[in-house]
Image (cartoon, rainbow, N blue to C red; front, side, top):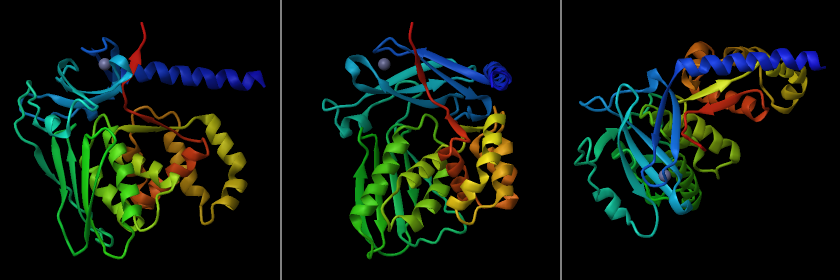
Length: 317
Ligand SMILES: [Zn+2]
């Protein structure tokens, strides 16, 4: 068996090496805990957000005294961190104080307002309005209200995200609360949020929030919000496993077709630079986005695809 393992390893090593050259590295030392934090990001994800050409990233990590700290980073086009603004979490900083904080460079006075544009197929079935106050990105995301319903509000665990929603009268408010709390904690953990994905997120959420969230649906929600900054990766080995296990997969998941799964899996073999969304665009003619997410989630649960997120990690000296 050893001769099988060796060539597979060498492929992985080759991928790892070339990966380093394709991504740009951002590193900085946290002013509070003095740890070096590193992020590898595709150049294409590094979008300029203001006139100075800075891009904002959010790094939440266990900081000094093991307390969570969020650093809002302003990174220039050469991937140099020009400014870090710590936003500490905990009882000594109130929500009020965080929102009132002045950020020195670049100067931001007010929250930005960003519309969530619903997809054409969005039905306003259960979710009649949505408002997300995101203190990490200093942005207020809004889905325009349509229809009558009852209001509810949740706050994320670290209090960086407030979500307010109007939902149809006949659904259980506690169930929706669970969903929105999950959504808030996912948003709180995103290093680089792409606003466009919020439209897909509501499309996914709307028909589902009348039933309690399952583990699978939380993973899917997370995948949707990370679709532009995560990379689905498969190997030749996982392709072989897929072919071998297909009869079992098919019997457990009714209505699955071999060709679509196989196609997606082959797109992900040796993938280095294609985001989840890029892979979808490759397969687009065959399926809609939410169906695509469902299939990727299946393959990820089966261990055939590994989703690598764009996230910071600590380098221990
Ligand atoms: Zn720190």
